[in-house]
Image 1: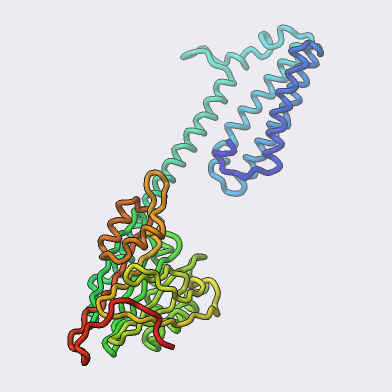
Image 2: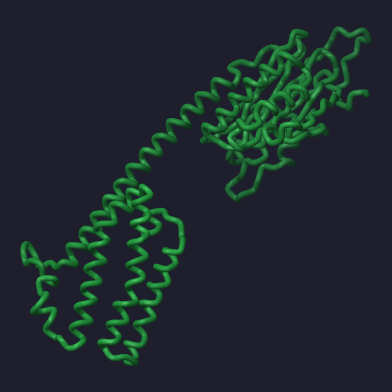
Length: 392
């Protein structure tokens, strides 16, 4: 009953447990014939009182607090326990020297009617309790169904929000080939990416992951994407954008956090990056060591720093979310960093497909940027494909 009412285990709960245990213990002296039958019956009746009082008190308190289930059970359970107490009293009185009391004086109590079949007062109270429990089960089933329908509606709305926020087409950035593969999981997650074109024919590329799932994650993504666009109007520094977005998210991220990595790409050989707790990028399958600050939405004044590294012709830069690393196979093995690094130089679609086939558990987002070969150079040579830290 406690589980049915979903009440916490307080003093009354433990009193009911202790009294039920005491009632069992009191059977021992009677079975061993240590006590006379009248005394034993009296002890059993008295030992049951704390349990009855505790249960009825729980129902009364629950009903006063607005618990519909407790209110439904209170009447039938009161009648049921009243029947038990009266039966115990009759039993004690009969064992004390009145052997015909139950059959002659209160026979109706044990056989209330013979039509359509014999039944007693106890049978009536038992049926009332069972009907109350059945009503509670029906109400809980209806509530569970409504909750599932509401959840399905919220998830559908979250998917709609997420699909609107994800770019439908990858914008063309001069000198770069950009590919993206987004593989949503069964539930709505918090992956996002944005590509914002700059006046100098460069672009800001952002990728990130909001903690949590469902509508809260989708709403955080919508807030974050809006903050990214606003911040990019006043600065093109990835660190400056992360700082602005972080301040905007404080107190509005539903208790979660967001990892985010922002790149500024242009026609120059250098890429500027700032990181807020996200996975580091890869160039040609090698992880790029970049300075990383705390995720967004945790602390207001977090310093973020811009880092720069060289990005030559035909180099491929790969970004992905932790849905790649956290893919898990049927044996419970994670896809992990080693597998991710081994295929980091593949296309976005092949990386995402490999992680999904391994055992997808979260949204998977993979973004690749390849610098196109520059053929019209003064030296007549193609730029080297290796990467190295940008000169100070």
